[in-house]
Image 1 (cartoon, rainbow, N blue to C red):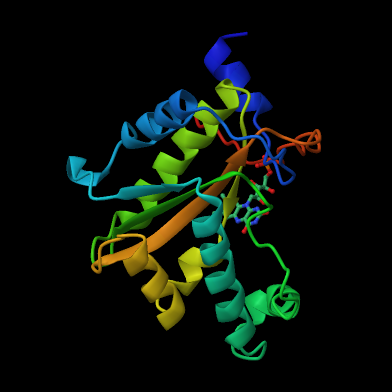
Image 2 (cartoon, rainbow, N blue to C red):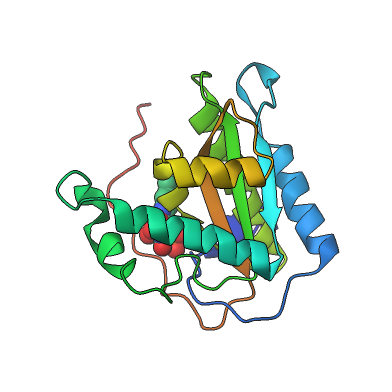
Amino acid sequence: MNPVMDNILTRRSVRSFRKDQISEKDLDTILLAGSYAPSGMGLQSWKFTAIQDPETMQKVNEAMRLTLKSLSPETHPYYVKLIQKAQDEHANFLYEAPTYIIVSNLIDNQNSMADCALAIGNMMLAAHSLRIGSCWLNQLPRLSEMPLIRNLMKELSIPDNHNIYGSVAMGFQAEDPKPAVPRNNVIHIIR
Ligand SMILES: Cc1cc2nc3c(=O)[nH]c(=O)nc-3n(C[C@H](O)[C@H](O)[C@H](O)COP(=O)(O)O)c2cc1C
């Protein structure tokens, strides 16, 4: 099979990671792949913030946990399980991955979400081609407006005029992910 197609068809979300770090060269390659995604009007207004420092990772996790803990399940039904999990002070929301990439972009650009999603897709496929597992994590994007997360973003030098639109946990997979589920009637060709 064409190796690009093989890479696309065999990528799976990985949620269990080994502790060993990916190489600097591989991280650079993955970020390069993200930065070469198309962007609306070629704006390239996104920013990729890659975290490998354990202390910073801990800070991100704690900001996420305290923010989730402060939410009410009634006003945030999407987060019920995460709010419960956040009560445990040892809870980890990053699958204990050694690398975490936050993708932010302009608050007031209509293409921000699409641009970030394409870049993340590129990075996940680039990672898979290097035998590195990844999983999109959707907590931070929904919490960008919360004060603790804004403070965290400032600390990480994410611009004030950005929101977080996506983030990815990365590392070597600790166990094989489940096989892909079949695709259900999602393709329609009109000839
Ligand atoms: C926009 C988006 C948000 C996602 N959020 C999460 C998440 O917060 N946590 C998680 O474990 N997986 C998350 N995923 C991964 C999906 O659950 C996963 O891609 C889907 O189940 C298909 O599995 P596959 O990636 O192995 O093909 C997300 C994926 C996308 C595209």
